[in-house]
Length: 417
Ligand code: AMP
Ligand code: MG
Image (spheres, protein in one colour):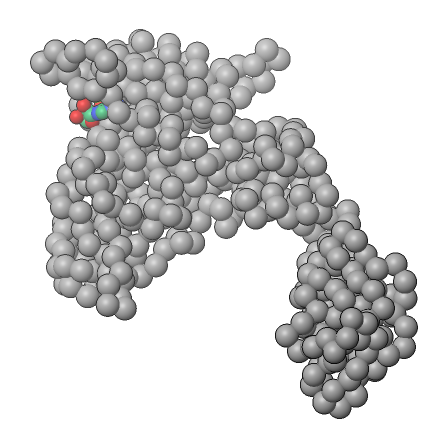
């Protein structure tokens, strides 16, 4: 029985253990998309001193009386240039956003609620809440608090948080070493003329580009011929110095499909075939490699179907979450559906009963409603089905005919890619 996408994801999570290599110390600015290897705490409080959230006047709240209070202006506090004295009774210090709160002050009066009758006095209009517009010490990050949890993949937000806490380096899981092969006698690189029956190879560039936001170091391993021995030899060699291999093509049931047999010979196929369109012949397995101390190690291998759309869809739906898991990312990073939305179909859509099908679609917002449109012919060889697409949407196996307005699960590319 072919696996559903959910069963396949569960199996991948069960079969793949996060890589166990020693963490690496990298500069924060170099750590985008890397996975934090250990809980990391903030060495300092942010901000490290009470300061003003607005331009205005720092006062002592108990000095304010009724509708109007006149206070003496005793000095000023600017960002980076604090006022060094203590606030005297019935006085105010002119203050600007980010400037340190002078000692003795507890409240900020925003500039808009003041006037200056003279150079050395200020009139406060109305009353104000005590402690208004004061950012307390540690208001953003408390000293010693958990800043980056183990398993977090570092987005620009986390890099900024690490930097504001004064960290120069973070400990991350090393990048996964991934090797990418295309397979097929018909494949040529652009730049060479095509003989009859040949096509330009396009899957490697798609795979490699789609993996750019993962913590991976990718080797482009070229195009394999449709030959059993050549396939075995190339996979054996590549398995020695990669954590995982990704191939495209050669996993179906044709006479020229050698990848699955090669995996079976060199290790094992853990599962093959999915109830998924496009992507049915997807294979996952491992290749056993012997290290110098004779301990058996294994290199994972994802055998993607060769049709360009199937390659891309299975890479997005299965390989990316599997690699995040392997890189040590926590569940949130692996969940395929964390960015899923339910959206009405813009047109009636039919497909074969029993098959889970992900179509390429376009989310479009108009007249207060977002709907999902199909992008024409959805054949798995047609890269043009991605033209204008900004999402995948699921036609579930248990319904053959969907009508306009039916809600479907949509995976926006902004969450997938
Ligand atoms: P296969 O899975 O090897 O039978 O390939 C299925 C289809 O995808 C065939 O039409 C292949 O020519 C095509 N194909 C396989 N690999 C690639 C590739 N790397 N680039 C473009 N088309 C491919
Ligand atoms: Mg082939």
